[in-house]
Image 1 (spheres, helix red, strand yellow):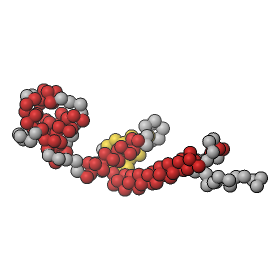
Image 2 (tube, one colour):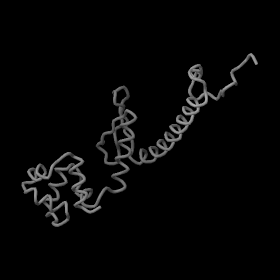
Image 3 (cartoon, helix red, strand yellow):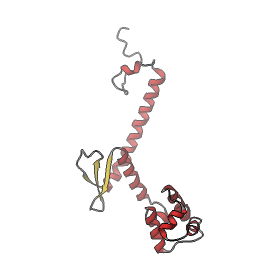
Image 4 (cartoon, helix red, strand yellow):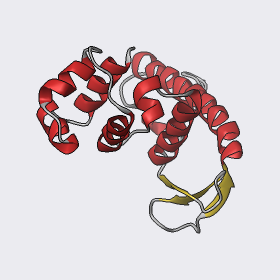
Length: 167
């Protein structure tokens, strides 16, 4: 992806028109159009303003997301999806992690620890999700309607016919 394509993609993702972005920078929409079509390169000062207006780093805007940027986003997304908040700490390599409800005290956690455990957790979550889907399909397709509700847990090892004590 070229820098111009990335600029256009980020602008659209942010819900901005060329005119709106141009107004923030004090240039015409034609200039933005030329940047997006890679017909013109912005000066350094304009590049900084562009990145700032779009809420991304100049490096991200012109070179694309780096692996650490994508890893950081994945960690934040995972924690947010699980009901946690992540905030940067005063220490550069640490984050304050707390639950969204505010019931747990924020913990200062090193970024490297998060980067180590999140992929493992995601892999485990995918296994659990796959097992849940498999069991749910088994229950829906192979058990008579409503009989699986009698089981205490969805992951019960009991199979059809195993609970017939009268036979």
